[in-house]
Image 1 (spheres, rainbow, N blue to C red):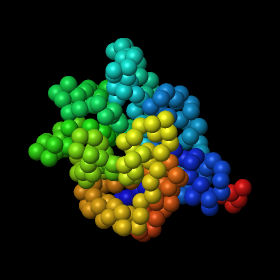
Image 2 (spheres, rainbow, N blue to C red):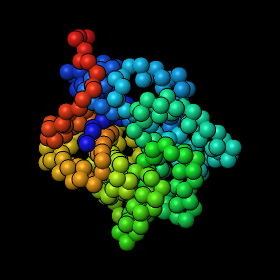
Image 3 (cartoon, rainbow, N blue to C red):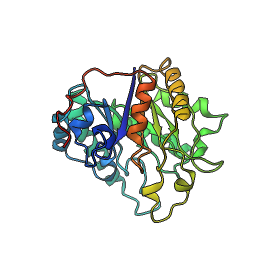
Length: 281
């Protein structure tokens, strides 16, 4: 099975015939079967907020939720949280996702680690501790430091992730020798392969000026690049029960057009989407 989604649901006018307003969650769920939300990274929502999301989508719709920043150690080097605060984040997170777990609507929890999270013995141990904290919840890990992708050690990494029942996130982003990560289409846990596409805007990605967050994913994949992704995704689908592709190249609202184009290239259709809105205005 191959699924396609976007980051957030609001900022994708291509899903509503390019009407220039926020897209509603029901409108989004009428076109695509999964959404990725970064809300919990900044602050863990209440379970009632999650239940409100669920009321707006069909029963087969699924969510990918980012792990909280304390769970991925983004606070290191700043105002580092206490171990009690970090433990509290895990506890609150598990409570927050219960409604999704009960309804089988949690595709995975995305642990997107910071660029300074290198491959070290300590950080390998942290992955083990994350699995212990999250019990049997689905976990996907995205590395942003190239030390994780030493060619001589990549196979060992996949075995380690497989032993922890963790999905390896396959990332497309600008990268240099010592900055960013390469595209490594390797499957660890054969239940899910997660592909996240950030675009290839090298100038915007690496020049962290005042507008960095607004331009770093300013990129539209062309037809040739999408055809390459279609081939890769098809190959991954022979190795995993599901391949989920998330487009995050949305600084210029290019994610949805690219997602719909890849859907058509792969001749995909999904059962159980929400009803199409009669009026988009």
